[in-house]
Length: 70
Image 1 (spheres, helix red, strand yellow):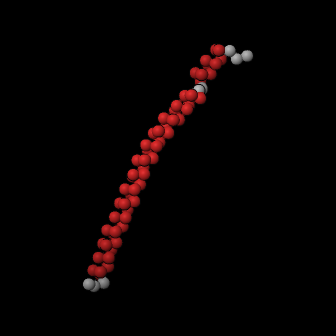
Image 2 (cartoon, rainbow, N blue to C red):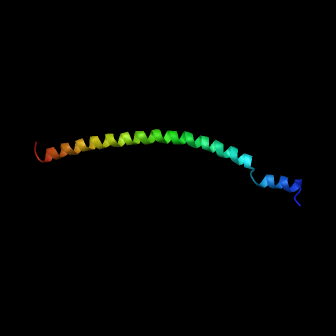
């Protein structure tokens, strides 16, 4: 039969459901903050890519115009 010694030994080895729930909720809080930061970074990266493409296309057009007369 299982007695109190066995229960205390098992609590030393394994994580209880309450400890697991508290750990998971703290990780969920951290992940939500990280998700918000990543959304901002993704938006800025998208804007930067469009700006770079616009500048590069202007430079390519200028080079083509220079080589083919103008």
